[in-house]
Image (cartoon, rainbow, N blue to C red; front, side, top):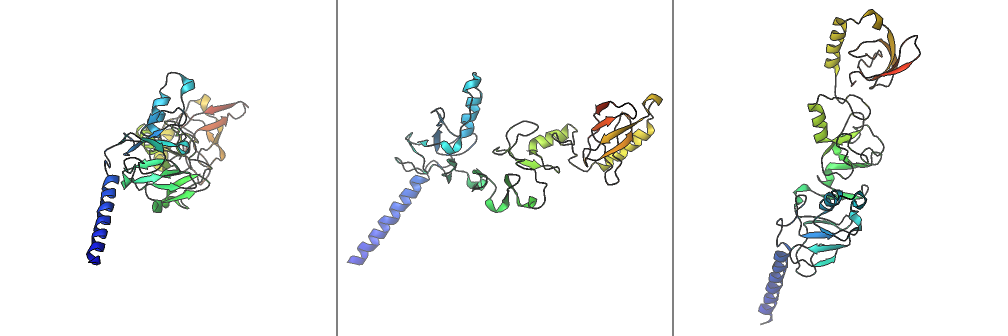
Length: 293
């Protein structure tokens, strides 16, 4: 008679586990904000206000009329959360201490980060100190650039120290913890992909920071050669200037022309912004030309 009793105990345990699992999954993907799906809110330690996520907090505080009151939350300092299901305030964890609901399918105790949408393949990078998306196996941390990059960029990008710990040169949002996709230019500088595409749509093909070309401009330079050859400058403007190539950083001499000034180094036939001195005059002037590649 003991065997059936044991089977009954196993059945009760299984039912209890199923009940707990069902409770933990209650409301999954139904709560959250425009930024994340999660079943809790965070209490900002800086102002003791309740927000669904740090982005909601930062957007609200950055819009305050008094500039002195504007601030951003430090994600790692969050100590308290509020259950979105039963409204119970409690210490940071991933299960509600009152109703048993799981706050997020993904939870990082370091970043105090929750997300029910695990299709993003979130992971925490210890070197970055924050969570990122896209799957750990698809990224590596570049210690010099100071951020995680796609595996395809390993040994295949120009390192610029702490390049990601800077602001996008177009929209000026801080890149390191931005939720927008970023890209690395040939020169090593970084910017948002959408800003990069917007720059292209405005026919701007050089890095906003160092003025190096961001793609192969050889066909453009060929057309420019033809235009310069077909457009003679008046006699009083036919003089040489010293030029500094944006792409190779070498100096050379070129005939002044309003269309641009061509780098004379054999390996670099680009045009660029040029710092020059008119021969014989001794006075330097900054001439803005066509961006070099």
